[in-house]
Image 1 (cartoon, rainbow, N blue to C red):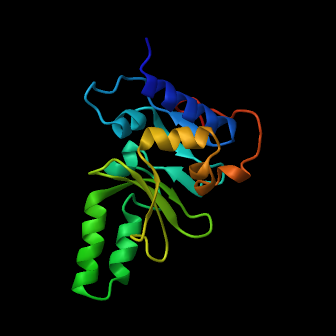
Image 2 (image 1 turned 90 degrees about the vertical axis):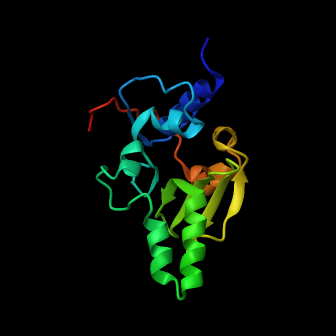
Length: 176
């Protein structure tokens, strides 16, 4: 019997593909049994981005620094560090980003992100100019995906409310 979380991940990827997102699947492999939900999700794709590439979920290659991307997975942290005026500001930025790992980035209008709180597992949303002034949007990754599937609040944060209703545009691994 399929794992309920795997089913949720597949439903979420199907939604994105149906809404015109680029969904490049990873070579099928099982995530380790003790893998975090985020690691299990990362194992499913190599690219997950809006049609215009202004919104994307970070991939394993992004975190490894091997992705061909204009934005590193820690770009918003770097922007905040550059804007920090004092040592105390820099320390606050470093403390925030040590606790939060970004999972989604958008440069469509304001720069914004979703991140997982490494301690609580909650999903937070941040937007420029003060990326670290976040609000909670979901109790966890599964809750985020459920909200998106239901066209809830998180879907609006990710731009889902203006997605076209077009045919699925899934791409197999290696297709351009």
